[in-house]
Structure formats: structure tokens, C-alpha cells
Amino acid sequence: MTSSAASLTRPRALAPGLALALLSAATFGSSGVGAKALIASGWTPGAAVLARLGGGAIVLLLVGTVVHRSRWPVDRSGVRTLLLYGTVAMAGTQFAYFNAVRTLDVGVALLIEFLAPVLLLAWTTLRTRTLPSRPTLLGAAVAIAGLVLVIDPRGAGPLDAVGVAWALAAAVGLSGFFVLSARDRSGMSALVMAAGGTTVGALLMGAAGLAGLIPIRFTTERTLLAGVETAWWVPTLWLVLVATVVAYLTGIGAISRLGTRVASFVGLTEVLAAVLIAWLVLAELPGPIQLVGGTLILVGIVLVQRGDTTPAAGTRGEEAEPTWNP
Image: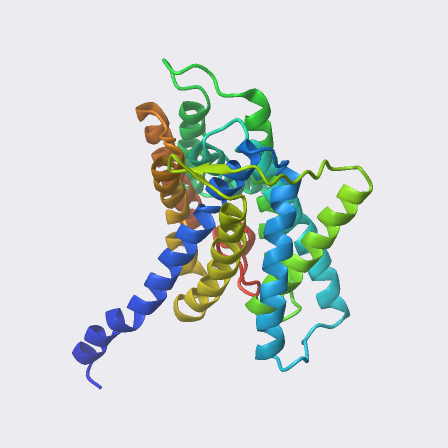
């Protein structure tokens, strides 16, 4: 095949991967909308996390059992990885994010959570006492400037401090996920990581609820989506089937076609999707200054990822599946 012919077919080969990556980002970004609708009807954030992880685990375990013909390729090191991944990336990060959307707009909470690469960069700099490259420092400065605009936009009043703290906790959890992904050498497939992580996270949330450490309260009150009253199971099914199962399975397909680095940049559209969906479904739209701040955060993250060649800060791991917000 000539070089010109190869250049013509390459975009066609990338198109399915880009479509899957965009769909995965959009479905992941919709999780905050479903969770906020349930929380507004009386559910606790812990209950929303448990429903999402528990339902997602059931479906993903069934899919994984069929794919792997009931022989799950998990060894001792894999079990340890899944325990950490399910605790930090699944249960911890989602619990913090769902608490954040109680008092913050979905898009604002997700923008703060996406500061994880900048937090990880700061931690790495302090630990190694080595300054990163100039493009990386510029990206961090741009992202922090964006955060200032998002948190305290003039004319709109400061955001809820507790909500911001929960969103920052979600960012810390996502930073931990970056580290776990970069250090993982188990060789587990993306599907195994997703199924195992949701299972561990669901069991952890259930145990914490039974022990009284986390309030778990479900209700059957009707919820409000896009100004229309719906049954409680509508946003619940959305969280499980769309924001978890479809999101992970399309993400798996995208990574296999694009690779983790390209998919990670496409995954930044999750924030844009979350803002758009929250606007359409919950009538939430950040103010003009917050939108400018959000744009600066995204630009800063891109600069950090391009300027820093460290795998933990640049991607969500080459071996581990997740390139999107878990």
C-alpha cells in the first residue's frame, strides 16, 4: 500500500475508536445527573454509589464470565490490585463526587475533580524535589487560575465550601487511581479491571453501610429529570446500564483502537458532556466566568499531560483500562 493510500485509510480506521471514546466520555459524564436526581429525592450519596457499583458489577461480571468462559485470569497480585482499585478509584472517588454534586453543579464538581493531574504533579514535585518542565508548570498555573474562576466567580458568590472539599477529595482519589494504574503490572484486561473494581467497590460500600460508617438510604419517591417526574428506577437504571456498563464497555473498545494516550485526551470531553447533560436535564449551567475557568482547567490539563512524560501524570495507565473518570 502506498503512503497516500495509507493516509486515506488511517482516518477511517480511527473513526470507530473516536466514536466509542466520545460515547464513553458522554456516558461517564452523565453519572452526576442520575446521582443528583436520586439524591434530591431522598437517597444518600452512599446509596447512589452502591446502586451504581452493585448493578454495574452484576452486569459486568456476567459479561466477563461469558467472554472468559468462566475462567477469570486473576492471580494474587491481581487480587491486590483489584482491592486497591475498587476501594480508591471506584468506591472512594465516586462517593466523594456524589457528595460534591449535592451542593455543586455537576459540571463544576467534575471540573474540580479533573484537577487530579495537577495535584499529582504537585505531589511528585514535592516528593522528588525536581521541578517539572516549563510547559508542565505553565499548564499547572493555567489550571489553577481556572480553578480560582470556577470556585469563586465574581458576581455569583462563592461556592459551597463543603461541596468544594468533596470535589477536591474526588480529585485526590482520582490521583490515587493514576498511581495505581501506572504501577499495575498484573496484566489484567480492561474488562476484568472494570468488573473486579465495581465488585470490590460495591462490597466495600455495602459493608460500610451495614457497619453504620456511611449512611445508606434508598427511597421510592419520584425523581425529577428534565422537568418531568419519573419513577426512582429510571435514574437508577441510567446509572447502572448507561453511566457504568455502556461507559466502561465503550471505553474498552476505544482504548483497544486508539491507545490510552489518545483516548485520554478525547476523554476530556467528559466535562463538556457533563455540563451539557446537566443543562438539558437539570437546568444547571455554569456562569460565563465559570465556563472561562473550566476552559482554562481543560487547557491546563492538556499542557500538563503533554509536558510531563511521567506515565502516572500523563495518562491513566498503560496497563489498566480506565482512561475516563471511573
